[in-house]
Image (cartoon, rainbow, N blue to C red):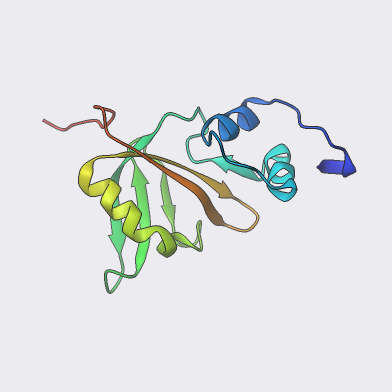
Length: 127
């Protein structure tokens, strides 16, 4: 925990990360990162899943370069260095219109705790 304390202040960001990952056991390092605001949820306004509106690949299907969510937020491989580790699951979520949430450690630029939710009409349909 920050300053060696075993305390966690229940800020909106902390609540969103924990509520968005029910049943997950967080390590001391993860709790510290959450408390410092370094580890946060992909949807900063809450743990409501968002749908993928765009995936961009570079030269081949194993070279995922960007993910864009229906809230308009785009993450590139420069923002999330391990984006390719999740490419198959992200592609499946995009194909089937599932909502997603995930956490990002902004210091390490890594994605963690990817959650995929059945659509249940969460996606904004064009039409």
